[in-house]
Amino acid sequence: MSEDSKRARAQPGPTQKLQKVLAQAGLGSRREMEALIQAGQVTVNGAPARIGARVGPTDVVRVGSRVVRARAREPLPRVLLYHKPEGEIVSRNDPAGRPSVFGRLPQLRGSNWLPVGRLDFNTCGLLIFTTSGEMANRMMHPRYELEREYAVRVRGRLGEQQLQHLRRGIRLDDGMARCETVEFQGGEGANRWYRIVVREGRKRMVRRMFAELGLTVSRLMRVRFGSVSLPPRLKRGQHVELPPREIRQLLASLGLNAEHSPIPEPRRTQRTPGIRRR
Image (cartoon, rainbow, N blue to C red; front, side, top):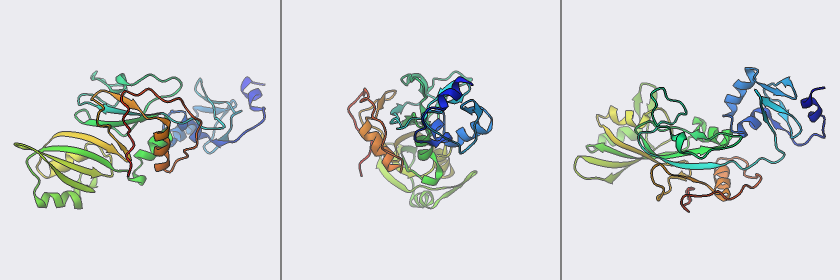
């Protein structure tokens, strides 16, 4: 009898779906974990796993050579807010050798930082990272339509007809796109600032919308994603980790289970809350 089978014969405990356990371990979203299971890269107690299987604390789950444990009580995920500057990519590998946001993040043991959405090379502002694939997937999935708020600087000023186009929708090559809110924020000279809110995260969507109106975005900064705002005193290139209380608030706002095992209070670069209170 294998060592994995011997361990699995112990008294069973509460069970969870396998793909959920893998996602909570920070290996990716549930959909990505389902693909991993289908590809035969996951075993449970030494046998090939199947989608929908339930596992408990005594089961031995392996992804390749890595062992993943299902806990009787889920650990609270970690959440990191990062103020991305222009000139960094949101990828671990880049053939061009450009700087990566991951080079500035603290190292983790036994899990990975998962980005919640992306910002392109020339866009700055709020990036959220978490160790929970379930949280990342919930925040990014189009079904939940979480708001993304941006500060946009353009050369020129939007006319009333252009404002109406943004609010009603503009046809892009990958479908219609619209702004929930467009507000003028002032400006000097040729540049004007606007605050916009969208509910999608398509690639370069904001820049493409303004380009369709004949305007060039000279600066783009994300200041909010869902209920999470960019802390005002968080400088470019800095990160701050949310404390357990704010993580539970975020989980609750996403309709996820906020009852988890406690984790130590994280070290913070600033004592600035990241959760927006309505």
